[in-house]
Length: 339
Ligand code: MRU
Image 1 (cartoon, helix red, strand yellow):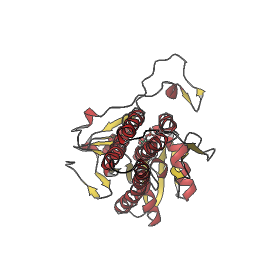
Image 2 (cartoon, rainbow, N blue to C red):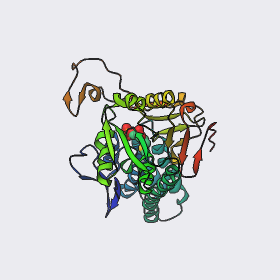
Image 3 (spheres, rainbow, N blue to C red):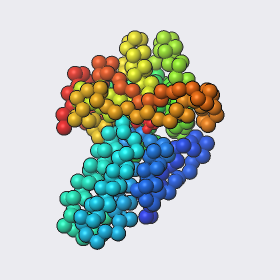
């Protein structure tokens, strides 16, 4: 199984996604600051994987802390939680995992500090294991929606790399493939930083899933030709009404899918649902470095000083989403998620 985040010995190993598909190198992290930097620089990315990595970051902060009592330890954890939470604003899984780690620490406040530290590490591992289990459940529900000989279009990378393992949208594709239902996966390259071509195509190739890469701008054309049976993507945050933030370009694909009468599915674990947010209008959209748009893979492809708008995500309105696949089942509109 592809494991983008794993604990080994006394440190965290992150499969460096900035080097894929050319090199498979695990980057060791032995401090929460190293984990925060890895999240910021996309060494680890994808909503659930960010949450899992951040949880291990809190466990590392507990190990590093020189505190002699619980209030001192909690103060050190709060500093780490703040630093990790400041890395990327859109994926709610990050904040969900950090809140869960804080809650566990507080619940264990009467135990010896060594036991609190051990408990935090176990909780981070539990977050990872639960994520993989959720993905497998989601995969089974989602696979049932794929017709025999299905041609699936996906965007960005919502596969094993974006999660604890197996994937959300990627998990649906994997599960459908395991059941022999997938004729072809259309993989959109996903400008500006190419998670589709660098990561999803790598996963598909590694697992022998039939796929074909397209530039993002070719999606409308393949739909028009009748070569897409369904679209499935992941999510970074789902509002109470079902509005869904995901990688920039997802909204455009949902509009195209509606125009062509193609079902558009979102696959995400419950940790991606943010019932505290009524609609997608309140979701904070991360804006990233203009250099990502002014170039491709480090090569300049635009004037160095051209002004750039580089939102990392967009919001797909709930009315364009045929169904949301979670580990608890398939939810159809109207969406009304509650805590
Ligand atoms: O900027 P990224 O690569 O972290 O964006 C990732 C996505 O948008 C994914 O589709 C989303 O996190 C779902 S991953 C299961």
